[in-house]
Image (cartoon, rainbow over all chains, first blue to last red; front, top):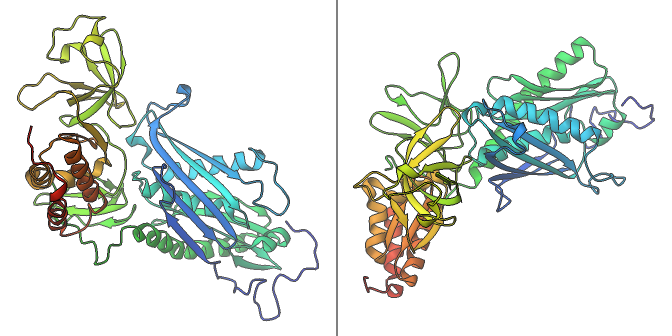
Length: 250
Length: 224
């Protein structure tokens, strides 16, 4: 962050390294139910990020002292593959992934109706297969899709996006180089409908105005991402001619 | 419907799968389909686990035998309990293995569920077929799809039963017991699998009728 570099991050036409404008997202693709044995799963490709999420539960929480008599505990585990980054990452949990697991668990707990199933845990396993900046918000976005496909009750979907400051300009969805050589990075996640912020972290410095502008950009972008989430979910249930639900049941 | 999507119940009473905001607005809790009845409005999720509700008839597997209770797995996040006094047999404490041991399946009714989701089931209610399930095969489907398998007033399951000459018991928790000649059981379980995968589509009854007709050759009409 803020590393002095002679690398030009924004060209004379105002376009970024990968040819995007200031408020343009990288391409996002989500596939649901990719894993047979998980209760719900999702695979996400967000620019160069490739992330696999598996959801198990709710199931009785073990070890027993982690049980909460009033609500369910969400245990998210964010893990990066050794080959996910340029230089081999030493496998296993480290400070960074422990922190990200914690903030993701907290963000998801805000969306899931945890009080419906006391004494249980919901496991969310996040494997970053390929990393390219913004993995925590991409993981979170994919995790909420996986939770929905696992049939877990939620008050809303969680959508994440990042913004940052590159060459004194506020831009949306930083790429790897912009993240490494830019001036600031602001990942943020909101509940998609009422835009309550459930995760906000910042690396680098932003002035009050810049922060406001970045937040506004993110919030605007979350609508687009939420659309992609919904499309991904309904994809599996598309049957030739519109699956109109039959009324009545039992 | 997607989680968080707004719902206007209108004159209908919101029932399952709807979340009420503090300001009184309703949203969907699940990713599923909306179902409007004459009186109620429900969101039926596509997947999810079973949560015991009082009065449900479920199929459970005995997991553990205690001095006065059995611990039963009903495919829910929580184990449920069957007390020895809630069985039709004259049980003596400490000798429960004689009646049911681990691995046995039972068809029981949920008697009680408390605030922390502990639940008790009973076998002691005459006239509704509660019993130990002997023989047969067990198959498992997601609990939210059970109403579809049963159909209106049991039409769907009866159709499968009649066409395949099998005995079928369906638990609200998504476990299904099928008994009959092996080849018939295979056809019946395939039919149920078909209902499960297409549970949310229209014209299901016709497709199942068609399927059962096509399998007629494989069915052994020898009723037991």
